[in-house]
Image 1 (cartoon, one colour):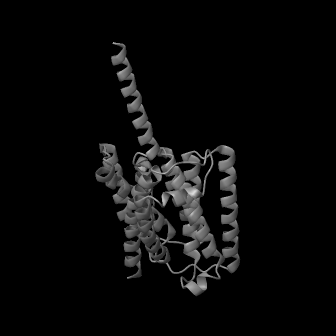
Image 2 (cartoon, rainbow, N blue to C red):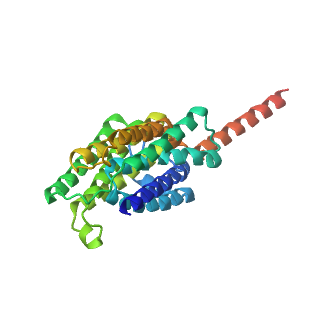
Image 3 (cartoon, rainbow, N blue to C red):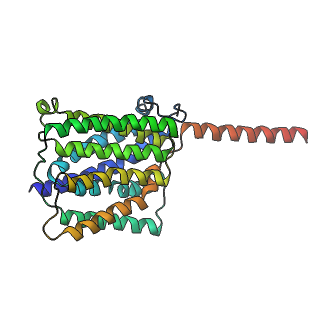
Length: 304
């Protein structure tokens, strides 16, 4: 029964995160980018003034709760593969909400994602809680702090283009999944004294900041693809090597094929992760161009 609830929670997580991406992209696209080439934490405050972005936050909260349940009952590779099917949800919602059009290749990618989800679900085995030493929890907190510091340093040196931002966002979201996987107890009294809990909170907030900034700047295909790989590959690898995650007996090939289908389809659909509504700046620029055309037309008429 625990396995079934874990699968249901993972699917709910994918649905919620997929819908949230569309609404957050619309809201982020309507905010002004004042960070130059870097990252401005105030972008989250400005984005919260947009109703679509707030709706996306609500869906993210639902997805987070479902993610916590799924990570407690399923191996990391299964949760991350199913969760990244959210990009298929984003692509499908982009059709009615953002007037996007799915090509034949896009529909094939959606089919690959769905097939991958089914295969991963079939191959996943129920997972007991991971028991690691307290030193691992502290080491994870230190690793997250180093990753965040390195992320801001890299953005400062390399510039905040969507690919760089999405790469770090994916790594931080992956770190969050690892943190949750090793939590022995989700009771508030236990979480308050667990360094892994603090590592997960800080990683998720910082990752969300990078992701929001990438959406605000109109992330390119490779940016969202990098996000998918970053938040999927490392947690899955650590799950198998350190936490002894496993599949059902004899289902390793099915799990590998399902994982590759889910992630590969998500990467193929990654351009929908950047979908956003026209920003206020774009609207202003368009209005200015129309005014300039009208002035030029009036001047031409007066000259005649």
